[in-house]
Image (cartoon, rainbow, N blue to C red; front, side, top):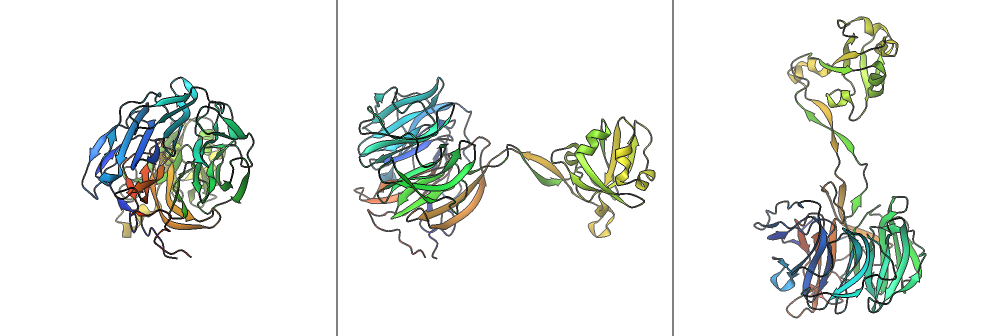
Length: 463
């Protein structure tokens, strides 16, 4: 297989970081009128310019919603953003943006008053906006998707504030809405990807009603009846991936990968163990707390050592790790015992008297001459950031997928909607197309492909 994207920003992708305007995370993107629009989101607003190849992280500022509309004209090769005047619709998040045939649409979401069901559009590059409905029949929702498909708008899924949705609504004017289905074959979900490709509407991934991330792909030719293409795509469970049709292939960029609210990883910690045979002491209010914090093995006149450490517990935060040795036990503020505890199973903690405990530990490697008598131990640190897979996949039919590129980066703690991906007009007369990838999380990167002719296949081979 000839990979189209051997590395991020390689081959067809060019990195254009020279003018970075943070749209904030959760921003939406659309391409129309030979321009790319970055709309709304949370935070952002910092303008930063840097030389090619030296882009800096451009963080979102605050968690306020915004209704900012930014335009990047294709004729300037994407090297500058211009801010349009404030639109009539309220600052929001969790909304949908659709580039129609002649209008740019903003649909529903959440503002400071709650969930919305309104529909807005512009026909003049975002200079002015018209309200088509203040309360669409599809009902208030957020984190849904919307498409223009077969000459009509589609609104799909999302969250109503009390339940996940699995409905599809259609409209030809943004005012009158009809339910195509109230119970689609795909499960109720939010924060999924959607695009029109090869005459079909595609729905990919997201969260379901059990807050389980999904990796399925569905297609429809009418918005009402849906067919499953795969229940488990190789890109894995993915939340809010960037999806677009380009070069006769469907492209999927990244998406959030679910991790626990707080994960723990060991990191070098240089202040606990130092000179040879040094001891770190951990104080516990009771043996019950000590026994829940770590597990000891050995004893019965053998070495007592640590066999398990609770992530984020007292021992772990003080640098104690698996393999360290127990060298002292002090109960109820008495003098430490350096020998007797070794005669009991696992150091005798289970039979220790009520009251406080101070346990002393050392790393056996601290007595290893080859290490110079100095050991850098490991402590555990909380990591509340989500991990995003910056993987790039493509497919002709939603069933067979090709991995085009793969790497990882750490997202901001509350970032979602990592990538906003659009297929934009290009060339002097807009007769070519290029895939444009925006970071909806931080706004610090813009990637785009080289232009190709309308309807032309991507200039690479796949097998």
